[in-house]
Length: 227
Ligand code: ATP
Image (tube, rainbow, N blue to C red; front, side, top):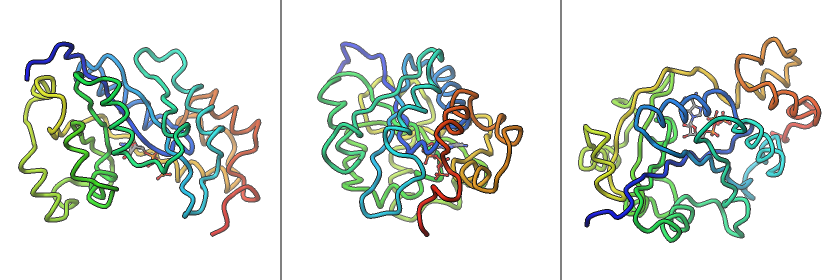
């Protein structure tokens, strides 16, 4: 079906607990390389059945807004926090598809997350709603990562050209290589909990986010979730 408005919308979902340069650089780099006008960073709700993340939903969103302020093309999208359901990606994509019936939706995802996608709620439907651009992450390799069921989906949907993602609204998988960022939110939380000072953190996340963490005393041992 020909597209009326083929300008894609890219999406990066996560807990962002806290948002860090890994998230921001993969989003900006991929947007530039694939000529994506907009990347929406979508924080997930705190799952009710798991230990809560270190920061509240309000705090995670506040940090995300600080992080994207002034970065062209990056936008915080709070639809999962506002919704009164668990943060199932398929529901998020459905709401975006309703809003943007004819634009390609491109879900950016690290290979560490993609390798578990077959455990997500109604996962086969994800590919009926969006494309997936899979990004490298230090410590994870595509070849060893995929279960047989996912390897089959991968083989069937993999496209060698990013331009092909503009020709359809959904259904493709594209492997994109970004500058490796050995940064994780877990490492940041652990570093703060261990009492590190700001010099150990400035290379990992934006200064306004670090200032927010300090002002709200986030991720200190007494504020960490019980194990
Ligand atoms: P945590 O350590 O708490 O699990 P995280 O650093 O992995 O957090 P998330 O918010 O869970 O961050 O990640 C959101 C998305 O961003 C996922 O698709 C994840 O694979 C991707 N991502 C996060 N950090 C990186 C990174 N350094 N390189 C590539 N992808 C990343």
